[in-house]
Length: 266
Image (cartoon, rainbow, N blue to C red):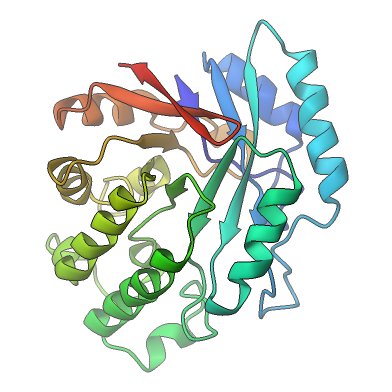
């Protein structure tokens, strides 16, 4: 029972303290969590800077929580690192400077625009909005390897204004497959982001068929994360996530220690 994707007040959109996150994890029967606040280097939207402003305090407070809840909960030092073409060297320097256990590589910017905002879709059809997002991942990811898992691969569906259809996960499937092969070749993994269950699709991110494709291609490293921003959603759909992975044939989920995978049988 793990949750490897959560945000506290160290992220601008976080609504819980580190202590509240830990208590919620214990209340939900979790054994291990990774705190993964946003670090978006050179974020273009300065009105909401998605970055850990006091990284030293962040590292210190996670360490304090680890000691405080020892024996009840394992607390890992993580980060959700935003990827852009222009920030790869800065990203490597950042990751190498601090004692991270776990790094999520996430993509929130496409051609200077966040798919969270409506303007991303104003000049794109549904198909174009998905494919442009996937192409951005495919263009950047082979150039960067200082991460552990690729975050919410089909994130674009979360914010898309277009009507959801059951076959949307097949849009750009050839590019998705190329991305997954890159991840596997790098010795990295993907996450099952359980926040997707709250979407009208009622499935995680990425779609179960994409997760199955990852497994069929030889992928083994997979984490479970709620992407919670408040205590009430810590461990969201955790059991459903584990059951889904079992149904897809996974025998292990993955934790991390000092950036090295630890496989936990499910």
